[in-house]
Length: 80
Image (cartoon, rainbow, N blue to C red):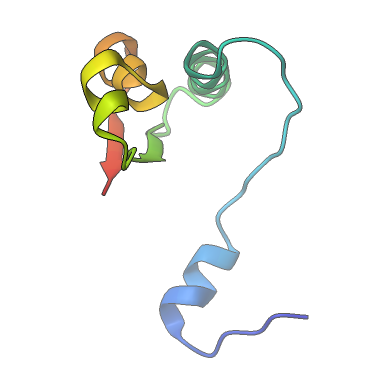
């Protein structure tokens, strides 16, 4: 069992989360899940958080992160 004494860690232990198995285009499925969460909890703020690609080709041609940034109706946070 992983235990964290830091108050910041204890805060995140209280944040609800869910795991879903989905098939399809990754960006499309992430947006669909975020929209369904937003519809179920309209008073909550829903943000999609993803890591950026380290590949220059992905940044130019496109990746999940690029597709999310271009098409998501919800806020997207991209972590380098």
